[in-house]
Length: 37
Image (cartoon, rainbow, N blue to C red; front, side, top):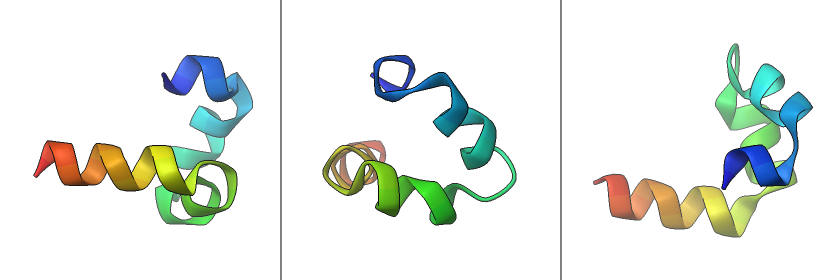
């Protein structure tokens, strides 16, 4: 799912996932966070 969103997003999400995650994929990240919990 992440790879489909964008490879550069992962690079940015590595050091700070809270920076691009909510900005690039708020729905996807939010859902993943809920599911991961």
